[in-house]
Image (cartoon, rainbow, N blue to C red):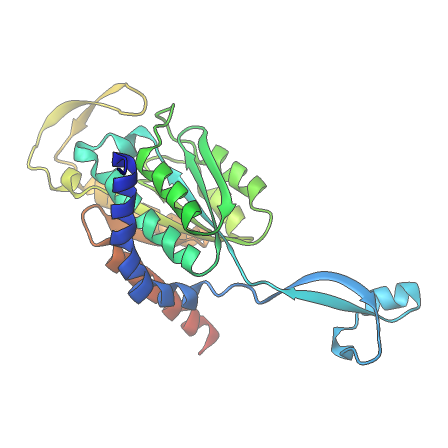
Length: 288
């Protein structure tokens, strides 16, 4: 008999398979096309070689004609950088983690279907768990298992440490999705630096129950990450809208594509809309 963990993983795979195959795969390929060809090395010119591939610098230096050799870049490297801090895991009813698991599983399966290599970095205020990029169904299930069941050691959030680790691991141009509630500061400069080399995207998970609560007045709450208590004025729900607005501005300034996803919304529609919006922006920029 299947274990409970295997049963849950199979159910998650079944839930994601149909939208991946019939809706998201085409949208994904239209946005993340890869870089075509990649330079490999140079070799001596041979009769019949295309003179347009001539490497004139090497030819001048050696006195012998050389051409550049290229290989087709058939696959991409795709990373999920997932926040497992206390604010992501200790919300009411575990809704944030459920939404994170679903949207990350959809991204994993659509990338695997596109023959891309998928890697995972789970982080808090330290890098908690790393799965190097790989391909195939068994690799996808390994990532989905970690998303569902991995329990972090720490509670805090440190983007700088995680982004430094990602920058060290991702030597080639990669696609990365940072998934978090972004309830922390001091990470925009690092994201912007990485966006010059990689295709960086952010998924902001927000909990509507916090914004829609009918409670009001001053209440004492405990910060799930620091275990410190703070007095919060629940009248100031505008702070939530302010955080979202500031996040959008910061991501725009950093050159990062942002998906603002509310817990409880349809993850498939959210991703399809995000892919479609990115495709439309690229068409507008190229004048296509």
